[in-house]
Image (cartoon, rainbow, N blue to C red):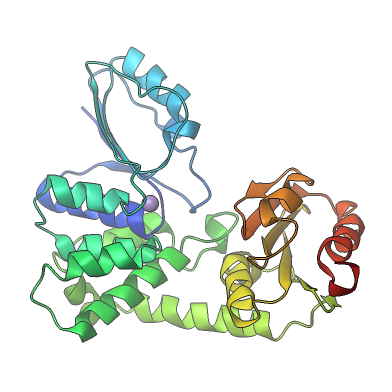
Length: 322
Ligand SMILES: [Mn+2]
């Protein structure tokens, strides 16, 4: 019988699996990838009698592969917090632990099931998954000083940052390798004290941001900026953080960031002011993307789309035309 551990390569996916395997050690085949790579279950070559554990990847993109595994006689445990349309699947071989409440991440679901046994890792994951309020609430149940919470936060944010990129070759450390590095540590503080990989990620994160900040914007108009980052791994890692940084430091303008992918297509990250007439999601939908009110994105843009994107950014957001 083979065990497969299938997990998102971000902080939440890694820390959810880590807690589970501390409680139930087993040598499993690891299946993971970059944060955006969530259709992971279709890669599992399991046979009847095998056991698959799935963490922090949406049912939305894995439902077909899940049903196929169950039909083939494979046992599946599935832990996740992402919204998925349609009814939850039911099957005698399936154990489903889904909670889509807004202040819950997969590592918090696992923490609950384990009665808080490896809670430091759930706190790290909640910080990494951008749920600082939930992380602080959970940390308060432990007898630890504020400096420890701050160190866990840094670890969560660094583990999360490590998962950004177009493919594993963009990443500072492949997620499966990172998981194996933290696997020996029952408590997050031990990992922080012992493993040099954290300093390495933290340093790369700072350098990536410094390189982005040194780029001259292509558009620097009254209501909008556009940065086109170069074709480089650091640029594909930093695009989202850089867009967030621009939005936080200059809330009055819309900020667009473009980065080329290896296949010559482009990705766009867009942040818009709360008061923007056109939401980030609405803008990105015009180019086949989507998102939320103030944050959106598009993938797979062709180089020919770029002039139109520049024009429409100016038309939609520049102060003189609003
Ligand atoms: Mn998550």
